Amino acid sequence: MANAPLSELRRVVVLGTGGTIAGRAASSGDNIGYTAGQVGVADLLGGIEAPEGVTLVAEQVAQVDSKDMSLDIWQKLAQRCVHWLAQPDVVGVVITHGTDTLEETAFFLHSVIASAKPVVLTCAMRPATALAPDGPQNVRDAIVVAATAGAHGVTVVCAGTVHSGVDIQKVHTYRLDAFASGDAGPIGYVEEGAVRRVRAWPEGAALEASKALDAVGQWPRVEIVMSHAGASGALVDALLQVGGAEPVRGLVLAATGNGTLHHALEAAALKAQDRGVAVLRATRCANGRILPRPDDRLRDAGALTPVKARIALMLELLGK
Image (cartoon, rainbow, N blue to C red; front, side, top):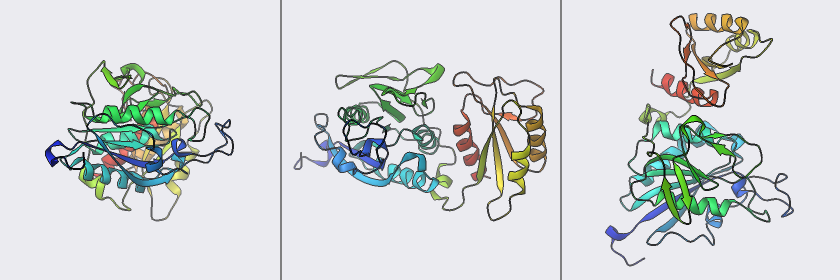
């Protein structure tokens, strides 16, 4: 392969960010008492056979527990994706990631990258030192998706299932098949090294892509506040009173049911909106979307979860 002409080279680039998939525990029987982000991405690829005609390239972008994912890492990750996707012999990019914030990273990348090539995130629920780690199979499946002809957009591969970067949600705390795609359902499945697709590949949204890739230290501050029984407007009032260099520019309200809010929280949110703060309602429900009503005074985020709505609102504000 090293002597093949450039036109025949097909590379899949694997970008590492840490997570459980790169975690280590003191015992092979310990699947929860591990330290995430300990194994380098090059080592994760050891023993994984690439599809025929494909060469793997490894690059470490970050090495963190995904609960600690940051905007700076997102930005760097997106920049590296754009760089590699522009290479003519690169057919796709795979990203190894922790499960805790995987859905947020996937939605962010979906929002800022519009590419005819695939970006595939994958993960593990057990650390690399587990007696039966799930990471190697997930990585292998993700590479298969990245090398599949016609694949494009941002997807997530876990436990043999291919999810859209828009619809993906973590729905279980422990089991290996921890993700779901809600009402939309999965894109397809990886079966014995081949993709069986059941619906279309996702199209990249590319919201304010160039600004997002260059927004060093300029991310607008958007916070999430949950509506619940006995809620008040105290958190909203407190957020607006906090001084400093980063005033709150947006609020996402994690609403009950079809976007409903406790009356006290709604009153505080309306005051915040009158003061120029962007306010968006997103449902707490795992499935379904908010159906708008003519008398709504606060915008809704449709089918987006609160964490995804926060990303969408940040990108919207970034463009203003």
